[in-house]
Image (spheres, rainbow, N blue to C red):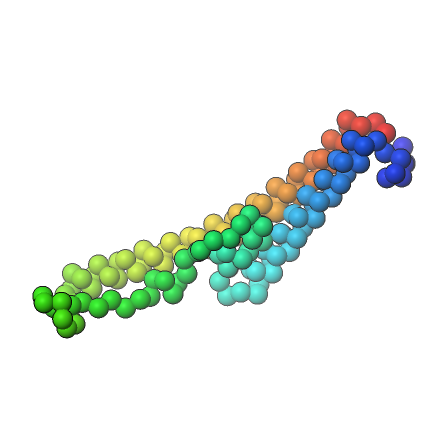
Length: 136
C-alpha cells in the first residue's frame, strides 16, 4: 500500500501531520537539551529544551543566595558584627538556598529530557496507530 500523501484519507493525513509535528518538537527539545548540557557550565534552569516551550518565569539562581546581610545595633542606627548564632543561621540558609538551586537545575534537565522523549513517543505512536487504524 504505497500511496502518496494526497491520496490518503483526511483522518490519516491529520495523524501524519500531528505525528510529524510531535516528532519535530521532540527532536528540537532533545538537541536543545544536549546543547545546553555541553555549552553551559551549569544547566540553565529557565532556558532549556521543553521548559522553554512550556512557559517561562522567574527561576532562582546562585546569585540570589549570595547576598550580604547587615546587622544593626539595638537602636537600628549603625551596623554591628553578627553573633556566632546569626552567622551559623546565615550560612545554613545560604547552603539550603544553593542546594535548592542545584536541585532546580537537575529537575529542569530531567523535565527537558522527559518532555522530548514523550513528544517523540507520541509522534511515533500516532504513526503506528495510523497504520493499524487507517488501512489506506
